[in-house]
Image 1 (cartoon, helix red, strand yellow):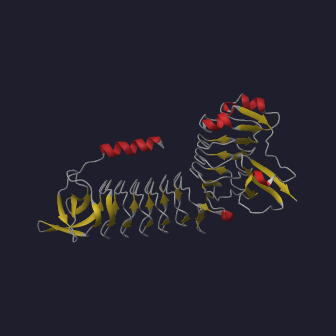
Image 2 (spheres, helix red, strand yellow):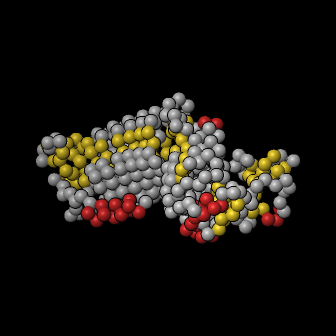
Length: 405
């Protein structure tokens, strides 16, 4: 993420400076600055470099008369309202068809935006950092939600994605931490990596029936790419289905409240940054069929233990786990494989490697004074013991599997 933060910094310093062709007050007496476009026949709303930011509530008119000539307002320009920290609301008329990049970037007090049905595209970083924005209704005319469009809208509690949208860009809703639910309509054919990354408040994820590209099979609270059986977006309540073969890049990125996840034996690849920042995880078990783990897959997780069922360890990038995990966690490996692990890049960084996991199934329950939480084998919290396998989270940070008869 550092390179994108640097990009933001550079653009904020060296962003495009614009000077208005003219300015006209709207019906409320607010001065709005315009630049002529399309051979001087239409207008684009801009930020005038010599004046600065807008404030309060701004109603943009659909047409403007200046020097006895009437123009139609068709565009909100790049950076038009960016960093207007005192801007509270904007009404965009139906004449506008285009909203430029960074148009509302950093409008930290913006609580309300009306986007008309004439707009077809919401570009990169359009509402980045609008952390007072609590809800957005995207009109049925929009077909594309661009990269980082609503990144760091940390107050956004709900979002309605219309059935017209076919594409959701990379990190489009990343870091919307109080967003609790999302529904992907059957029109969506493309979802970029990390589109809902660091949405730590998510508890409900659903893909509408009839979507030919994605599904949420078995009410798993996840988005799965149907043809490849790749889970691309999950949350703290996700149950990874047994027929999923890959956990995609950024799939659980920043799920800070997730304490337990079961990776089924069907999984063979774990993507880069897949569980980055899942700091609530207390233990990870990697199935035997996994043949690849991406860079930083478990970075940002200070795990007390890692259990690998892989018989033939493969190369790991040094960033796969955090330094705290490498230095302080115990890596449990299959009996007879410890020397392989100690000789393999990445795995050999673990300071403590032992054969045979301590989390093997026990035939008796554990002293209740040491328990914090109890989960069923499906990963859901349960209040009482269930027959079969129970997973117990201990107050020392470890987890244990027990059989209740």
